[in-house]
Image (tube, rainbow, N blue to C red; front, top):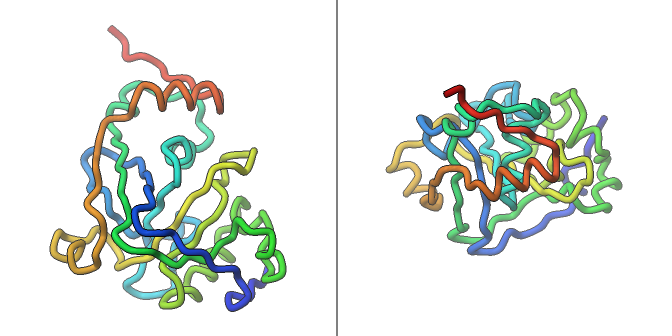
Length: 195
């Protein structure tokens, strides 16, 4: 699959757009991954990575837990949901628009098992966009939207976070309503801890 990055539709995430991310409690919220395990990780661009967010808490949940639909309560308790409000508009390559087809984008890029084409696109977009907007691959209805934001590889320290203008996240335990929504929408089951 060959994607023409210059032909991709662009979109602006306005200032104050709220984004959500679920992560392990012992880790900080911001982490820009460079491994081959993330769909839009810029694996061939030294010093750059991707940090994954969703436009809804439910989107963050389904992209965090993916296909194992039986989840131990301990795993739920070990995670937190972070919420940010963008401090400034961000420009993203928008793979949710139908016109992205003319640039060579198909559903295989955003939901297929081969991450190489998506990672190549992420490498090409470094310095051109702030990230990529796409349909969450584990939402078969195609209604939930994710964002891969680009930044310096790894977990930035507080000084780097401030210098990059990254928003300070609000971090909380996973809300019982979110768990109920995930169970109803996707069939997840939360298994209680043994007494």
